Amino acid sequence: MQAVLALSVLWALFLGLLPGAARAQDQADREPGLQQGPEGAGCRISKNAHRLALTQRHEFNGIRVFYALEGPHALYTGVDLNGNGVPDMVEDAALHLDTVRRIYLANGFRDPLRSPRFRQAETIDIDLLNFDAYSPGVADKRGLSFSAVIRYPGSSARADRCTLSIAINAALAGNHERVKDYLIPHELFHLFQYGHAMFRASWYLEGMAKWAEWVTLAENRRNPTLWSTPLPATPTELRARVFANPNPYDVRHFWNRLAELAKAGEPPMAMPDELRARRFADGSPVVRDEIWRGHALMLRILQAFGEETEAVARERGLPPYQWPDADQRDTAHNPRLMRVVQRALAASGVRHNDEIARFLAIDPAAANQN
Image 1 (cartoon, rainbow, N blue to C red):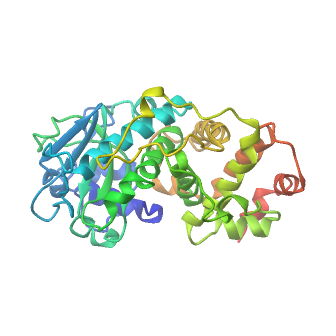
Image 2 (cartoon, one colour):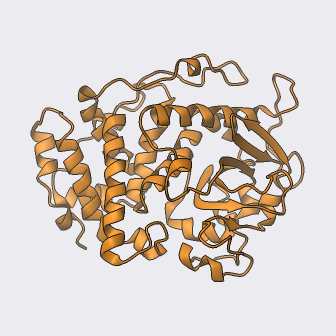
């Protein structure tokens, strides 16, 4: 999954820039290897050799998957159960992303392609790359997502379209199975997060994206602590378990607990009828159940984060969707974001108990002090 703390480096690599360059997005037009698009277009040109090496394309409902059958980016598995000439890993990735995207939309989340930030993007692409060749520093990662609109004029397969993208590690054994369970919902949800707000706090991006993985997964009792770990009760706990947690993915316990507490007061998840019958190439269902606890609360939080994005841009005199990297990651935003979470939970209609009362009483500013 995405390593948020390394995104600046990956952003430069993604665009074909110098290795190790960690730059703010609004400085990228001065980097070697990158050309700026038309004035105000917000669609950048990339000549990244690894992306251009993906010459095979599969398309499903407007979702495009680019991959290679040979060379350094060849898929680790070419299994093709239905014999149609397209590897199952490729078909399953497109099918799952289209399914998850439609469920997100049906439940009120704003399509990143419809967001003001990404208004120039025409499609969402999946690039199946060997991460060891693409960027050795992320060789053990299963997926990445990118918050830039890009076009590739050097690729005939991509038809010079402006796109958002996620990348899946094509060389990591077992990743086909991960494509069919948590990987696609996680990376796609990052694009939805980027479309709603500019904040890059890892406790928010990764923790909430871990919650989103359950959109098509079947809930079970193999790990009860996923839903039962109490909310932080003191500023010290909030800092240790959320703001300063060294493993941002572990903050899923915080977001999952919010979802568990909120589920009683929200409507069932919306599910387009035609998605229920969808099957992966091996015959297994794409949607494992129709339980997605906390979706209404998370939507309110994301929408409010968007409002806070506008407020911060005004306060700091920033372009609405072109913040310097330091502003996106500034930990000074933590109290502001947590107050949004507290207000959303308080207004969710959930009956308050001692756990909720203690959490709502925390001053997030006190938890953000070193």
